[in-house]
Length: 193
Image (cartoon, rainbow, N blue to C red; front, side, top):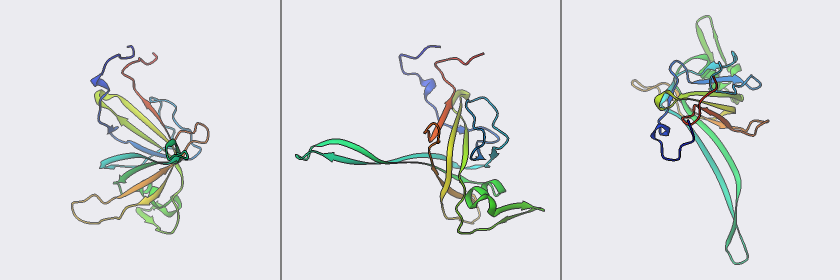
């Protein structure tokens, strides 16, 4: 395959999570994947089902316009950059609750989940999203360092998913500076045998 010189509908896609598990979490310092095919390190735990709203990755930047003495904009300086990930965690299980309330606040023992809701910040962690694009193309996104910084209201009612939308603030990797690293199967080059 060669680099395309024309539009290619094979590159247009929607996105899905890999069946059986698509969002995983591991403590900072765990071995991160560096490709699309290798198995995740045993430290990664499945975060559970994400609601039909999916996972939203957002970028927010602020800029300051700098003007010369005549009022002409001569430069637009970026003054801040924020990356966030938002997902509604839909399972009532230890991993999903620990993401929201902190690892030390959740236990699962003798058949009972115990959650201590306190004024404690959840910890930072590495996250990996395992996605599937059109025609079965794989997409793996490594979120190098993220922390839940906002939780939506919890609505308890018949006919609605019992889950809370969690907003994760993403921080750059200390080595690469990447907020995320994406590994996506290409339509223009072939993998090594």
